[in-house]
Length: 536
Ligand code: FAD
Image (cartoon, rainbow, N blue to C red; front, side):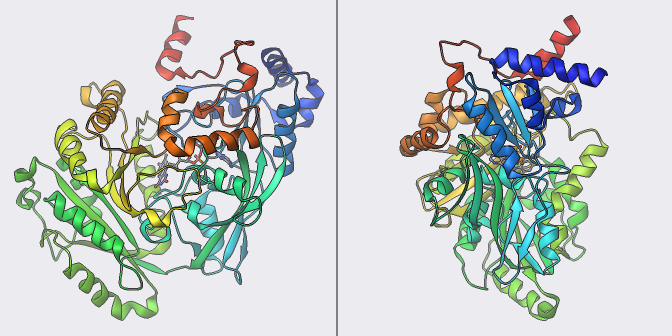
């Protein structure tokens, strides 16, 4: 009875708020749930910095259901928004909406199981499938996708809406460069299949398109034979230019004589190195951090992280191959940390860290992350100004840094990257803690992000944000630069009422135009919301 009342109340709210002309029975027919658990979970994300409650949540079991909902939104006389939500691992409310329905793409009962086509070397997956499940399905056939993210509990649709990058991107390109075909529900509620050959405009727009042009319900992803094991190596540098020179050399290699994964990170305090030292301790090379020369370098060290995949049948040659590659590098000789593990354990490595953090209550905390693409020609300026300057020997989470080759990115996709052949990802993966230490607080870290962006702007570093977050359309225009006109044209073509993914704050839904001033998608900062609740 209580649930029924709640349902009726929420549907009435949906109708009243957005002026829907649909009957409650029609909404029920669309399969919408207003289960408070669904609504609450769809109102927050991994960033835990904003909270926006949707009016209802759809848990679709097919693309047809997604299409029905979007069509209803498109055709309704007043309109309501529809936001796909994968696993909700955005930082700034990108999958949230307060003026309509969240489509919960990941989770029990949605879509179908991945279908592996071994002969053709691809897999068809539901848009809400998590990468960890894609991996498991493919491994049963001895196959695996080629390009990854560091963390696998992200949805296929979510990462393809951004790019999907990790240490394999220098060679295979981002995940969006490894997709053959998509099924997409456009903002008009049409279910369309697209690829480079069929509806190419939609295909390219959707890849890296921040959910603006359609909801991905199926992706056909390219596969390769899965390696069995991984040799995982970390080496340290105190000299930034030696570090970047080696990273750039490694990503220029092709063929078999190369590493399979190239990443790196910055160590601005000793806490971090001690964190991973236990799992990487090499008895042959015991290391004293103080002996590594970071003191002569503003206390900053750089860690190159590389892997070589192999099959048990080639185990005899792997040592020699790695030895030959390492010989060409200029790291601190006593700083080689090596470990060896099954391929799946390497790909799923961040999940282990997640479980540890969860057990300490440190996973569900605000995450003021900042991800930047920095052109190669400016990375030394970035080091001087940020790693050795603004950060001031304090971190609040890993800082990743690794280069990629622009020629592995398709310029026709919607993503924007710097205008140079090589650019770096620099990722500040921060966790804010409420432990009384000022440098760990959300406010401090958010301000530091602002200072970093201001520095990049004032010093003309020409960086581009990855997983971008802006509040005004003029900032988005600047972000997209020469791609803006096409981006806007594609929006007009595939989502003319601007109902999709409004949490990105790029386009205002047309039903919220000045004649109908119901701006309700503005996120409420979580702290403010908490205070309101207490005051009430
Ligand atoms: P959500 O947060 O649910 O959605 C993100 C955006 O995509 C929203 O605008 C949403 O509307 C849209 N969207 C979601 N599903 C669909 C769909 N089916 N069709 C169309 N649009 C859709 N990124 C990397 O590239 N490399 C990494 O190594 C990496 N590591 C990460 C590690 C962690 C711990 C976290 C939290 C994030 C990481 N990310 C990484 C970022 C991640 O790729 C993005 O945040 C991504 O959007 C998360 O996927 P999601 O399924 O949670 O998407």
